[in-house]
Image 1 (cartoon, helix red, strand yellow):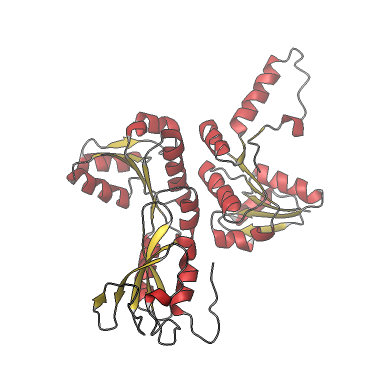
Image 2: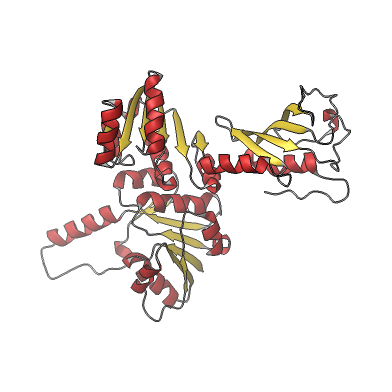
Length: 229
Length: 153
């Protein structure tokens, strides 16, 4: 595959290094001449100096035949512009963007960027996993379509406790794919599987149905759960 | 009309003062508080220090009630991203972005953002001035000189 990496900082450098090892054709585009020299010294002739948002630079880089563009600069606005130019000017089949502010994920998705990676969000998710107050943890986003895999911990007072999966009303395009009991044993869910208190439910859902899914699996009988947007 | 302007450079400040004088509810944002010195002393709108591509900051600026959003920072990518957030996340009815790079401007226009390309507008104006037979007659700055791209709001 021909992969263009925009941004030759630490992320871009190590990414390019791995991709070279995997025998991909790689080109790193970086604006800083000193950084370029460093990368060239370490990885060889895989770097080009220039502004990765500038169409003329990208033309020179052969963006038109790239299979994938990965934008990993430290600025979300630049990563977005790189991916939008790659998509709309060069019809690159797959665009990946690094996101620094996790709240930007939604706009990237809405604008059709195929994959987004947010270190902040990943670290947050790891922390939240340790906290009982966050019952829904996004595990990963899937290619296109706004689908993601999430994990939901079922609290003891949830109304789904004791019910079979068939009886639970899940939001549109949500699917329970795995249940891990409190003792750590996994169960492959069928319609007859009974949800127990403390179960960790791994589900596939649409980004916008996250709130509804959490409500369905964690809401208690008393007050109807609030559906967060 | 409630208007949010991102970027308090010469253009942002001038526009903010103009709209405020006409009685609009204007909020102007910039990353640096020092930029607000471009505003006239009698500017009575709201000044907000913050990053215009941060949705929390935009909410603080009142984007949920805004009728219009204008991005006029020096960065094309920043302008385009802020406008796309205003349009697609907050549904602001009128969104205009300044984009210096003519190629990217054309692309964003194609994606439904209303754009102003100062590079093209200014070079056309300068060319027009050059080609005028009477060197004394200079076009007056007014709405007739503004060239906006894109028809969708």
